[in-house]
Length: 601
Image 1 (cartoon, rainbow, N blue to C red):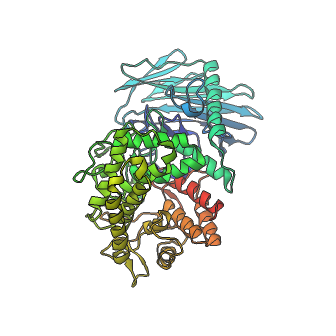
Image 2: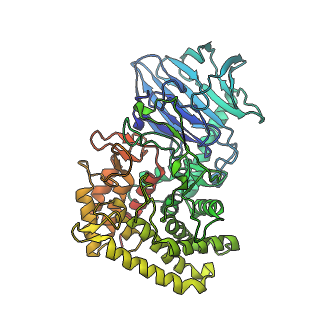
Image 3: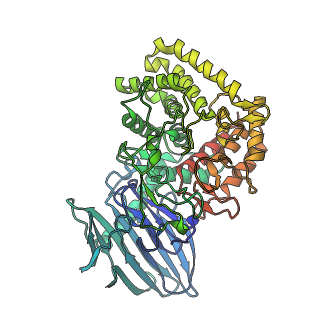
């Protein structure tokens, strides 16, 4: 089983897929050619599921950074009398700039290794295991490298040094001298496509330099934020771009599957999909840390993918595949041990067919933010958005699984009701654009009815807070979003009491916020949730409690790894990273809260 801390992994991306690289130079996660494709390396989930490492043979310490304004990773190994510098990138297409990032990515992982200050010996171990470790490919020598064949994939490793083939791996050592870098590469192709090949050293130099230039061109065009926490916000913007699937504009929640929320437990999910739930918050983050074009592309993906069966009987699906797929049926990889024996390892996500009423508010909130860019909206999109508002108006009294996708029975979750209110509030603001004047009276009446019902049934004086659902006294951090959506002003006494209740009763000893502390139909306990911690900071800022907001925000920021990446959760006792990583939702929370704190009302 893998014991390498989740926080030790760095992210590479070509805006089509992602790789995770450990602090000691091992690629322990790589899916090709898409984020949600079967893995080629999955040692993060099982020691026998494949990896590719390059590192010095001797004892060394390491440090890492991203090259300025890029997602090109540089790892420096320090030995007694030399330094070894490893530079890793998933290659972008030749000459790709700005909005075209990833359009012609060659499915190529490039690794340059060089030494400084003296000679150094390095070793490389290439152990591919396609399809989540199920396939042990046939390795064969070829001029300039090694081929790996088996299943639907063909891999070609470019190696400037001779490699020994044994037991399903290719291994070799060589001595580096200063001023003479070596470049390795892994090229992927699928059966029936142009075959992968060996690349020359000059080609790889050009590809690596071009990839860095492409990322810098994107950053130059998009990274305009100049407020407090500039570096953190800008990196988070690049992370969101790195989690974007260029052909459709979809943004994955995370590039990994089954990294656990509870070590050794079964709270392990596949996050390589796009959630409608994240839409409105993502729009805000893209506005701050990227640009409206990315926001518009993401919105177009959601409306095109979600369009169709939404009416009084049929719900808007809560999540989609990055290519627009609807069926995300979940299956278990029984042969994988899981990170620190956290089983099961899942592929697909069984929440795809849950009913969650909050999605209407998220989608219409995204449309409202983009309203100035949607003046030429087509009739199909207009009809779809009207149908979403009508569905919220018709279905708001129903129980659902809620924002957290609980796998227990449906409930009347407060957040779901609030987001149905938000759906209608947004729809009313968009009535002219949607040509929906005939529905204004109905939407207004229903919106006001939802508001009254929430105030009557979700506020519990004996708790001193708005509760998780209408029929319990349990607290839930999603109640903080009531002031973020405008349902209530943050300085309303009930909202202030709820903020204090979350801070006092849902916060761990490190000052991070749990989603909830009640049973959710699953065994085990999860960590503290970073997005909820950002929500607390955001709500405090809206309430005018700026000093407290800054303190909570900085507390969340302190849990970034050495590269600035955030997971989904933090272990409440050890402060270890938990859950799939890096987590888009956490970086979205960072961006939106930084903006609110730097632009007080």
